[in-house]
Image 1: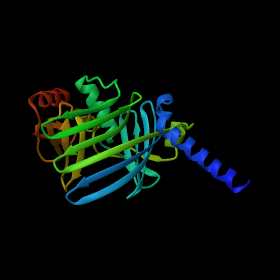
Image 2: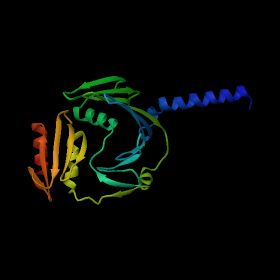
Image 3: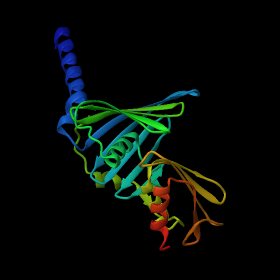
Length: 247
């Protein structure tokens, strides 16, 4: 192959690759995703790259930088770890999950292509829709702005076989009912102390929601643990109380 033909072949490959990045979204609802996440704040900027395999109620997210770890969604259960062993954890959502959950809970219509901006008291979301698919999500909380770019590529895979590569550990002292508290959050972060687990975030109405699980005291007892509501809207507090009343 002479030099000119080689150049033309390289250009054709580059064009085809770019075409797949831009337009594969139209043809594939499930598939292989590459997501780049950028976060900026006063402390600086960092980038995270992810590979996401998703099919129905199953999801595998492989984070490769700046640190390596994996999290798995198996229907309503979540697991996370930095090796082939993943342990049970509370619900994990990326910005794509949050955007879809917010749209669903608010009963919003984003069927037309364009940029949608939603402002709540404590955060804002920008959702960019191209060819009927969410391609970018921008979330701002205080001085922290997080942007997720979503590229989709067609790829054949067996999601259950992929999950089967990991050992999922359910060995946890927490009752199942405590993990189900995640469903009240649009998204949240979890922190642990010596005698407590604190889940802090926002409910699906955009209000602050914070609760604590400990072994000492709280409003509700679930097994050998207590649940204490630290901050919640009247509506969500009532929903949580009703959910835990029988335990």
